[in-house]
Image 1: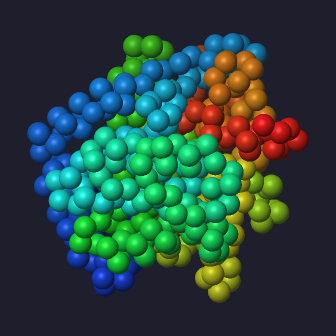
Image 2: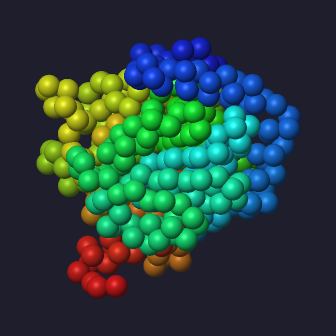
Length: 399
């Protein structure tokens, strides 16, 4: 097994990560880092986190053998880690509970968040209701339009949803506005970042709360499948669901890790959200990583059929895993993801989120190239209820 000790004390994963923020946020980040360092191994904190995961979220989430689809493909066996069965319908709630528990211990009565597909917003609003915290969610107006069901869910849960009209009106712009709010209200506000990006300690903190996914898999796979997988596959936008399942497997040298980026209309078209495959190194939202930017360093607009993958950067740990060769990153187009979405519905009776459908599409592409005794484990990070309007729109149907 390979030893792996990242990030370093300053939040670096090799040349990536770090803290590139305005001076007004340095104190807030130092305060957060100190609180996380204090509580991450505190028995009372850990016990409360684990209790909430079991009794509020419904963990552990099960493994599922996609037998019928595996048989039709005629190659490797495909297994799903069913994060779609969590309370709120995705992996996001794991991290939100952890950060909300920190917010309470830090005496912050107000939480804010950014959201793209809306699942992080729903999870944040859910835990805010659970703990009696004021909640404000920033969401690009384009995402508000294509994720209207999740917007209504957030409002039902008591959150204020603020549509963001700047830029491409998607996740990047929502994160910009959330950062501005945090600078203004830092004394009473905790910013619950939803992905493994942002300034240190967020990439580490979010990853750590999400590793419950991979740790469960390591226990479940020998019992349910007879051994550990040969390949672990997960969709990558910012990258929290992927690192949640990848990180516990990093030391398993025989297990390949494959991140699937949003290929949109194809890399050559320029209309995609594949930061590692098609990007360059730069600084965005407080950390150094791979970004989609032009020759002048200006952030480019992204495109994906999936709102949750529609982001021009990637978590710095993914950048390091790509450079080091420990993980491989590939792309799946909109059309391939939609085909996998429909296939999963009709063959396995499971409706995946469009984010997860990207990972499933690669597994479906990979399985026939491997022997039947090989195992591909896919992180099915969320369910597809939220994507009905998008899928219907692409099919020319009215809901």
